[in-house]
Length: 385
Picture 1 (cartoon, rainbow, N blue to C red):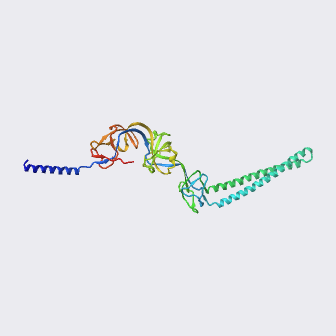
Picture 2: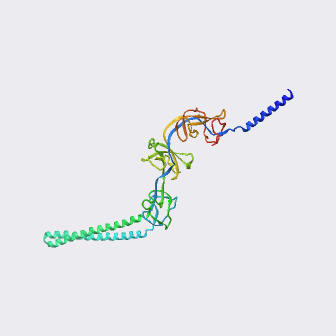
Picture 3: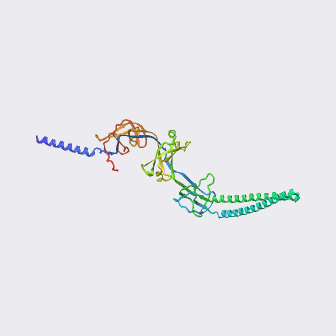
């Protein structure tokens, strides 16, 4: 080969190598994508709440005294467990206690007077009966008999009057005790003290009509919890009491708590600038789950309406708007956008009626930069559990 041709050949090879190097260094790098295989499994048709629900205690009492006054006894702290009947808070009430003591003394005195009057009535009654017997034999005059009978009747009336006065005194003491009870907060059930609004010697007043004020003591029964969640009015007719449900709590990540529908509200909530909803209550199925809960947790519920077993399914998170998915083709290392037809769906899984075959890989990281039709891609390494 002539030297001139050899030089030209070397130049062409060099240019080709440089061009290949430039293309290789500037070509789009394949993006890593997370994928899941199309597989067979169970898919459920569910409805879910439109806004966050709330974990609520089956019994919760926001307690306040029935009268205003100064706190004189406060032997509880927030977080204390108390039994039903425990004195939680008491206002200063020495005046009422003195009044009760006075009324009880008066009651005892009137009862003693009643017993004395009744004893005298018994004596007069026996005397009248004796005079009546003597009247038959002519030993006493009719006037003496009449006087004795009248005396017995008078003594009997005194007895009845004294008994009535004793009842009045006892009732007066009961009234004073009732007033005393209004100065005391007694735990109506076993529970935990969630909140206390007040300190020793502070003055508390009852809420005026129509004006809500913080309760003196907020008591929660933590032995029973349920979730109250708003369901769109369109979905509400399909829900019945006893339906199986799943509860998810932000505090527990992806964990699901089994439950059942226990109540469906008999009316629709119409809140301004919000969709109309029906409140549904879901109780927890496992008693052990309740021990881990706190009243006030935010919660979401899924109520299961129907179920298809061993049907073709993909993760719901992989589906794009317009019922499309990205399929990863490992042999070509590219992504292909594909239209699908879906059936039942829930937060986790969607049933596939057409458009995908079992074993194909769908992209679940659809919001990752660079994910688009015909993009070069490679499979993301699966994280070890």
